[in-house]
Amino acid sequence: MKYALIGLGIFLSAFAVMPARTVANIAPGSADADIKVLGTSNLHDWSMEDKDVTCTARFTYAAGKTVPTSLETFTFSFPVHSLTSGKSGMDSKAYDAMKAKTGGDITFTATASTIAPVTGETFQVKSDGNLTIAGVTKAVVLTAACAVKTDGSVSCTGSNTLLMSDYQIKPPTYMLGALKTGNKLTIDFTMLVKK
Image 1 (tube, helix red, strand yellow):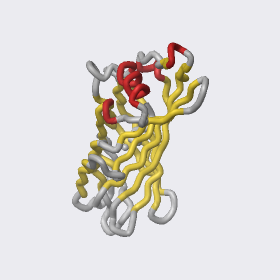
Image 2 (cartoon, helix red, strand yellow):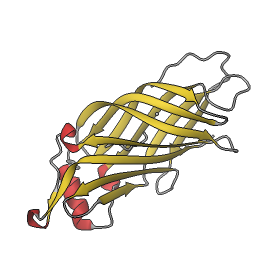
Image 3 (cartoon, one colour):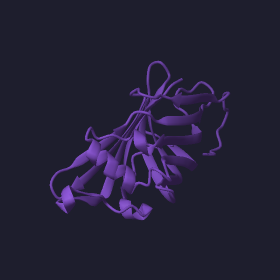
Image 4 (cartoon, one colour):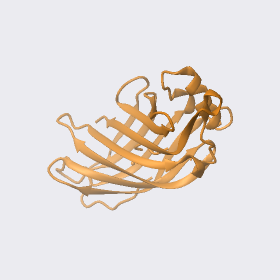
């Protein structure tokens, strides 16, 4: 999935670096960490959402700067069973397809990240890392548009696309095969990294 979610360890050299601000954002049931999975079918589009995402990030800042110069650590993880569509039949099929019983968590761990200033308090993060779904791990690149808020927290939003088949997932079917899901998924993510 894409989403991940972006999802942002990372080692960039920073000039006169202040002591790093460490933020651990563990936000079960809150909008602080929200991942949506969007898909298609031969009948209609569909979506699933998870608000029980565990995300950890560590930014570093140059002296006197409010926009971070590097992202040293970025990971997120959430159980497949936390994704819900509001339709139990669809959820059950999706859990089976994603091997929830044997590969129950979707995880991302960044291996390298870069920060590119945009304007003012906004910047872009690009993170290379490993995304694991259904027990299969693939190298991916996640990008996110980020902004420093007035309280010093950092909000990030991004989107990514992937193919179910890349993770050895067979696109689920429903209603005795009358509804067939597409292979392509879009993952939208919104995260608020607290100061």
